Amino acid sequence: MSPRFDAAAWSTRGDYASLDARAREVLDCWFGAPGSDEYGTDRKCWFKRSDAFDAMLRERFGALIEAALAHELDAWLNTPLGSLALVIVLDQFTRNCHRHTAHMYDGDAQAVGIARRMVEEGSDLLLPTVYHRAFATIPFEHDETLEGQREGVRLYALLETQGLDPSYARSAVRHAKIVERFGRFPHRNALLGRPSTDEEIAFLREPGSSF
Image 1 (spheres, one colour):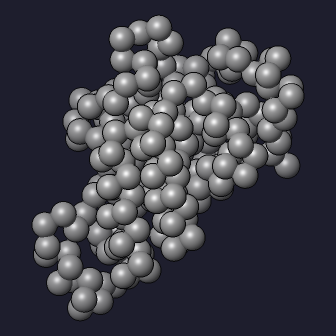
Image 2 (cartoon, one colour; image 1 turned 90 degrees about the vertical axis):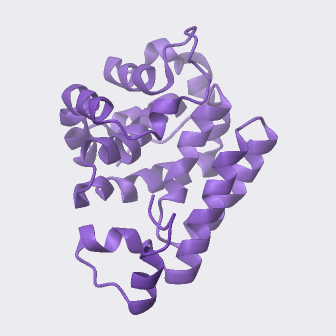
């Protein structure tokens, strides 16, 4: 059974320095090291497709993705920052390292489970910046359920009031509308071997239908 978050314990032993060194490396790579200029900012590398960035992540973290998928890193779940690091590996690194393959989505179910638990426990609120909290929320945006999509819209609207760039909330609404319409993301169909309906085929011809 995965460890459960203990807020009282985390307040005394769950600081950044106590994290597994691999989790710190994940967080530093994605958010910048604490105290650096990029820390707590909206970084362009997150959503700009770059072969060089993807290759760097594969070299540094490819083996870590497989360990996360095999639940070998579940001990990270005993702190908010550790949980976030695991979400980054399962939800973001998978997309960068396995771009244009079905393996992009291998970690989604685990990632949304961690995100849901963080919200239920309130541990997402203990993350250090609004952009850390944004990435604890993003698995809901990638979820192909109405429940997950609506939770993502709710959380991003809240984060916008706390200083998150409004583009995150707009993106969440776009994702939710697609799942409300089709019950899934049609642009995943080809990679996942799912037949597309005529309506989905027509939609996929529209600009902005894929992410």
